[in-house]
Length: 184
Image (tube, rainbow, N blue to C red; front, side, top):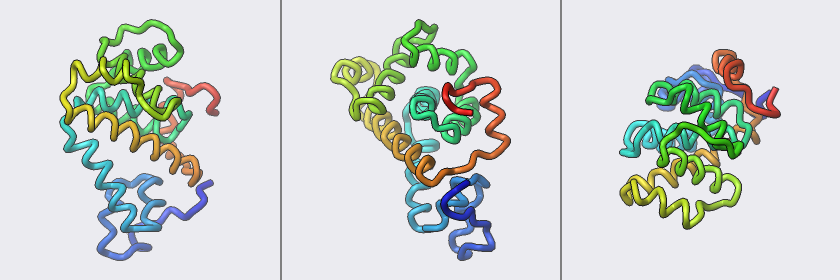
């Protein structure tokens, strides 16, 4: 059960009701601090809709963070979001295999992006070797967007865990196909 209430539109000032267009528990909880919710949504919106980083690679990196942190909410939401941006079942299976150190059919750049996300989760920073490998394929702008995307979602999973965010039933269905080890 969440540590703060989920607010409905009639419980927030009219100028903040647009923050609840996405009817998710995350947005309903964050509007307990509406200006912070707006700032949070601004970064999230840039990442999803304005970044020039390949959206499939972006979503794979986010999925890797959610998977590594065993964040049911983050992982399941981004499986559904990722599929809208070109992530396939094979991509998700590949991410799971790569996490376990097993071979996958993912292309080298996707493997490197996933490794970079794992390093940022586990070691705080991407290694020089991984950064250089990815940088061979991505521009400075894309590298900046990738690193900030991974860092932002490392923060998001911590918010979700600390606030004890409840996952919506529609998203829980994802776990039937992709069960996260250690998550019931």
